[in-house]
Length: 259
Length: 269
Ligand SMILES: [Zn+2]
Image 1: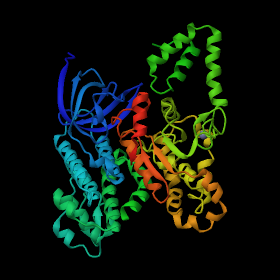
Image 2: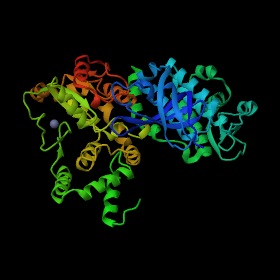
Image 3: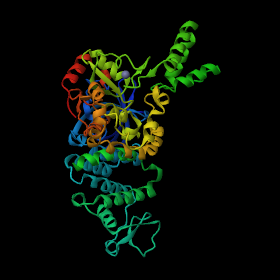
Image 4: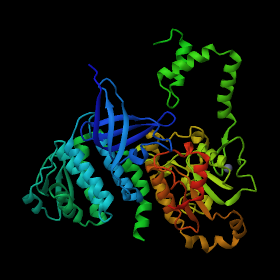
């Protein structure tokens, strides 16, 4: 019973790979059908009707014919829901945005609709496009929210955070923050500032998280903590390519932003 | 379908190693070769070997050519003060077809693609900077220089080889090198001693403009921003074509008129 069905849905473009002479295989994270790969015929022709909508990080509305027997669906239309113009104008924003879509691509299962993850991704990308100050805060925020939505919500208790002295612990197992003399499972030592910031990323809403000012040192420490937590739970599924390239690019980005 | 002949099966196997060739297409090709006369097959085999044995890369612009320097780099009528930066040799050909461009080129050998793990260290970006300023990255650490130059052949014709796996190792190993390069080549240091001695050379080979002819997509943008920031300390104007080209389209498939217009209408990165 391979019936054809026309699907119209919002989607975030996670990846595109050139295929054949002018086509592309595009991995979409769709609101209705979750992660799905589609064939976009002629997408690389300069007169393609898909235009810029199939670039990674794009927020687009797509139409495709769904046939359950096919591993690759055929994309017939795509048009921007929101065009993220600013997102593509800075090296820092591009690498942040790519890390976000890379993470979503890695942690989503094929054809497993996750509307809450979709809303989160779209919202974070919108903010990344719209703002430049402290946009880097979106990265730890995104990861902690995604972890929660995927069933590994960090158990951060306010009293424990307040009990942290100059140093404390992050339990990678439950994602909780503990004072230095506690003995939680798989603990990592971190500074008070980093643990407090971590707790904000876990508990606060997006606008609060974006208001937080972090020094470079603390930011690096928080990012390490978040990454360690994510790796502990998602293991090898946690992606690494964009991080490595971002590290090569960062020297430049940092230099240009300080001037 | 499995062929009953081992040699046909082996050929199919080899064809599937080529990009965009799946098993079905490989079988179709093998079938076709089977029906061709021997002389024609020999010509294909010779051509395949010849590109590997005769063709090299120009050591200046890194285009695929039969000699080094390539015809464009050795043509004194081509303006050496302008360098057009392209991803691959095929993009260079697309721009040459317009007949509009009279400067020189630089072939990067790919484009920065974070999702594929391809970073600046996997491309010929430092080589580009050294064409702008020979001192670039040379004060710091000699090893990264050698490391980059050591494998032009190996990396050469496989062109798009920085795939995920190889790029990952290159990235990790290249890290300290990357650190040593860009910052050390500040303009003050350049003007200190080297200026007087090399001023004639410098004037003759001086690069005034770098035109980035990378594809108008996320990878192209990333590459353009990175290069323009890298070259910021130098006295060179960095422009980008393709602002008029549709995003997502490949330069290679742009018609000549469109490409000429894009080249003419180049602007700030
Ligand atoms: Zn050359």
